[in-house]
Structures are given as structure tokens and as C-alpha cells.
Length: 301
Image (cartoon, rainbow, N blue to C red):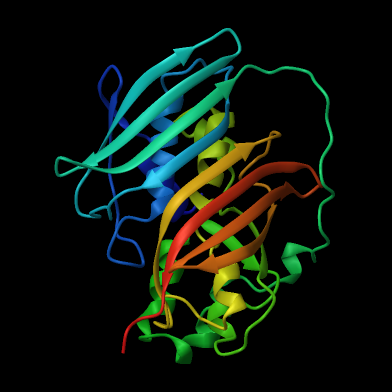
């Protein structure tokens, strides 16, 4: 396992400081605040550690309230809202410097048989035929705010192998495109080996879901940028941040297997944009649905 994946798993290994209170470390992001996917994943870990292992999460709904300080730990307080026969509900508040920065509600369910259908998986090329981050990011260094942006992105995403099916927003600045984007992703390392090596984290099914939650915040607003020919923060032609985030977990998945993240934006207005995503396993199972609204503003002159 590479050092970056070990570091990410360490971030998810929260310290229990009271029965339903946990503390997580932070690390620098590519922007001067804690990466939203990190806070969401850590909050889901905190909630999951108060729920029986046979009840994986089936949904979460979250609000990003304040920018997180990457130089300070985050305290997660879990409220045990409900423990039913089939469903368990938890509420988590993340606090830094005495103020809430993030709020999450999550619901967990025991396995149950029922009616089943799903949308078909969209077509996409084999991920191994697509350029890796190390190949594509330096290629567009001339478009970035500074030459160091490519290195910062590579470092921030070193735990995840994330490959764009088409060119990312920063590669086609000034060329509006259809507001759709696809990426393949998986962890840069085998998670079974990580757990066997003694990673102090959560059970494997919850770990997979928390890692997918982490990745889900990386590219979901890309489709908004594509519609307007904007390159994003790396180029400096928009400023933005996640506002709220919702996920529904439909079927089992493994975060160290290839997953296709199919994303689109139906609307943008009032300085906000909406992103919708579907995550499929490589064999075509619809595993996760995602919706996020974010602030997307054009910088003032």
C-alpha cells in the first residue's frame, strides 16, 4: 500500500474521546480549507461506530456550514436519534474552534430482500486505457494559476487513482461543453491488505462506503464548469465551495475496485449550481446516487 492511502486510512481512524464523541485529524488540502469529502467521510465513520456492524448506511444528508481549518483537529459529536428494528438514525455535528463546521444525518438499515430494478450503466471506456493523474495533470500546467498547482493536486489525490473519461474542466477553458462528466476511480492499494496490516479503522463494508463518500466530493461540480467553459479553482476563473451533499447507497461496492462516477448538472443560477451523480461498479450495478449543490461564483474584477 502506498503512503498516501495509509495516510487517508489514518484520517478515518478517529480517536474516541467519549462514548459518542470522536476526534479526527485534518490535513492541508489543495485549497486553504479542509477538503469537504474528508469531513463527510469522517462524520460517517463517527456515526457508523455507534451502529451495529450488520447495519451499513443507506443514506446521508449533510450541510457544509463553515470552512474547516486544516491546522486543527475536528471533534465529532454523535446523537443517537433512533434505534429501530430495521433502521438506525444518527446525527453528527463536526466542531472546530467552538463552532459547528458541518452537520450530517445518516440512516442505517439491516439487510432486507425486496423489489429490485435499476438504470442501466452508461457506456464508458476501460479505465486502464485512460491517462492517469500523473500523466494528465502536468500536461495542462500552463493553464494553472501557478506551476505548483499540478503538484498540489497530485499530492492531494495520491491515495485515489482517478481517471477522466473526457478532458477535465481545466483542460478546455473557454470551450463550453455538455454539462456531463465521467470519471473512473479506485483506491491506490488493496484494502484487505490494509486491514490485515492492522489499520485501526472500521469494518470493511463501512470503510468502502466512507472512502466513496470521500471521493464523491472531488469532481461532482465539474459538470457545472463544463457548461460554461470554466476551468475551476486551479485556473482561477471561478470560486466555489460545497453547500450540501446527499448520498444514497443502493448496493455493495468495493472502493479498491474500479467504480464509474457518471455526473451531470441540470441547473446553475443565483451563484449556485447543482450536480447529480451515479456511481456504478465495473460489472454494471448502480451502487450509489449523489446530489450536491455548491457555490459557483465568477470572481469580481
